[in-house]
Structures are given as structure tokens and as C-alpha cells.
Amino acid sequence: MSLDSLKALEGSLDHGLPFANQESRSLHIAPPLHEPTPEVRAIPKASIAQQDVLLFLRALPGESVDLIVTDPAYSGMNQHLLLGKGRIVGNYQEKEGNRWFEEFHDTPENYGQFLSECRRVLKNDRHLFLMFDSFSMLSLGALVRDFFNVKNIITWDKVNIGMGHYFRRQTEFILFASKGKRPVTRRDIPDIWKIKRLHRASYPTQKPVELFEAMIASSKAEGDTDFVVCDPFVGSGSAAIAALRQGSRFVGCDTSEKAVSLSRKRVKAFLKTGIDIEQEKPAFDEAIQKKFW
Image (cartoon, rainbow, N blue to C red; front, side):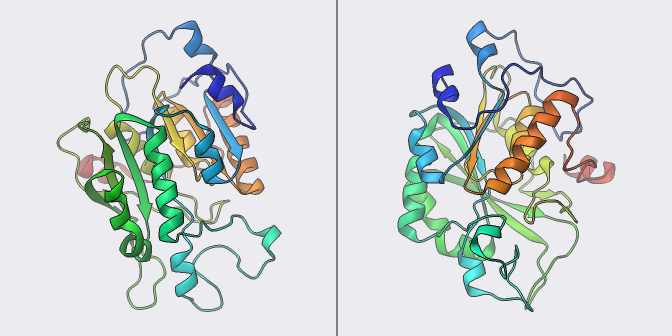
């Protein structure tokens, strides 16, 4: 991605802050980067805009990002399934302006536009990781094949059981696809990722950083010295922290002012201190890491 493109994004974070040297807790660490060129050094390490997802993607140049990892705020499940006094996520009793996030109205038309823009901004021979709940996987998953080469479906095992009406949920799904041909970094990575869900997080649907680290580490090859990760539904900023831990740069957006404020604060703190203020503990234990990674 060019320097001008990143600078043009609304609400960029601070430029030039050093990547924090810390003992990484990632699943699979990328090798040290080669010395970047002066132009690469000037590009912001992270840029997060408050913007509609389609407007954000349309503003990015074609073939400008290396990897898309995202967890859209799907509307389908919440519109069809009620649990107890409320819906699955968020406080739906509040007025529109007080909610953490607005759902992405995932009609086939909207989702097709989203996928089309994802394909346009993604470089050739690069990967896409799309998270799904069970309802959206059935209603929208097949559309991905119209735009990308679908390679596999990864199951995220959250270890701890969650809510459910007929069967209590312990898993979510990650659709793995490619634009062109690109191998994964290792041949021994399973299609079940056992990473603990977060409890009592600041953001209602916050995902573990390790989940996004696994996506990045399995896609980013040795020698990718200017690897740009994009999450157009940035939420709490977990993907941004994962990108920085993996020595990559990050661009993302969200429509929610609360989410953007939280994620910007989180990224700035990490760049300055090396500490993730929204997830202090790793989401897996040593036994799980050795067995699955």
C-alpha cells in the first residue's frame, strides 16, 4: 500500500512509533523483518477510520492489502433468534445511538458488494479469512465462491461452552479463501483452533488476539517485509494488535465511534508500551498450544 493511500485514511494513528520489543505470546512468530526502505518506515503502523465498510473499502486502492481478516457484525442471527430477555450480543434495549455497533445488514446484495470490494483491494495470490456464525454460514457462505477460491472452513473451538437454545455453542467458523494461489506457511496446521473465548471483555463481541495471530501467521510468508493486514470490521482492535505482534502493518475501519475510540486507544498503548490493555492474559494455555500448534 502506498504512503499517500494510508495517509489519506481518516483518523490515522500516530506515525513512526517504534514496534514494541517484547517476548511474544503468539502461536507462531514471523521471522524478523529486513531493514525497511525509508518509504516503508514512513507508513503508519496502524490506521483505523470511523467509516462505513463499503465506503472504506472503495477508498482503498486496488490490490493494496496482503491479507483480509475480519468478523462482520452479521444481522441474520440476531434478527432470527432471541435468547431470554435479549438477543445474542450487545444491549438491544438501548437506543440506536448508544449501541456499541450497528449490524451489517447481510442481504445477498450487500454481502456481494462487500466481497467484490474485498477482492478488488486484495493483492493477487493472497488470502482472506472470514468469520461466520452458524446462521450466516448457511445463508451467505456460498456467495464467497463467486469471488474467491474457497479452500477450507476452520472451526474455532472456544474451549468454554457458551449460550444456546437447542445446543449450547462452543464453536464459530472461519472461512478460508484465496485470490489466486498462495500456500499456507505450514502443512501441519489443523482445521480446529482451540483458543479460549474471552470473558468480561470491554467490547461485547471481542475476539482473542491469538485467533487473528493464527490467521496472519499461517498466511504471511518469510520475506514479506511490508505485509499489510486489513480488517474492515475492526471492533475492539484485536486484529490490529495481532498484526503488530506479527510485524505487519494494519488498516481498518468501523462505523461505531465507541469501537474506533477503544481500538485506537488500545493500539496506541501497545505501540508505546508493548502491553495489550484489553487482553492482558493469553487465550490458550501451554498444553493447548503444544497439542494444536
